[in-house]
Image (cartoon, rainbow over all chains, first blue to last red; front, side, top):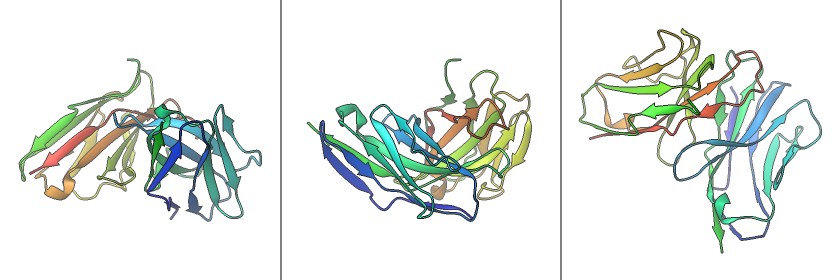
Length: 116
Length: 116
């Protein structure tokens, strides 16, 4: 079974600075998807960024980028130019391409606070 | 509708009471997922529907949990004889295609259940 681990329960960053959130996962599958989701206090989970395992190029979405190390099974999220609105819980998630429907397997989350 | 909606947003139940949680997915979305999120944890998969068919219920924690989607749109998660350990946020997510695994899962705001 696949597992996702986020070893940083809390992180803090100064506004306009850069922060990196860590995620590792365990799988025996060769093809899969990885996601970072953001969950603000309102609870609505929002997709931040997605990475296909077969792509070597790291995904980027504006101020958000990932460092995908497939051999190391590592998938970190870098937030550049942090803004107050980035404060939230961040979840790393794994999705198998072989599993019917494609359920998400989440890590425990990292709570990010942004200091003005 | 514009997004996934869930009702009620908050539910307080006495131990032993039955509860029903509703999810309205994005119109036309084929796939629907239920997740359970305990306090301070990442969401955990409960069950998956493709249209009206429940194709995966491997995450349901006990036979007290039952989900249905009779017409392939609205879904109801029912918990019978609630226990204190059922206290959690129940998240619903939908996606348009069951075959395109890269499809984004869109989440609802969740129902916070508190069992006293």
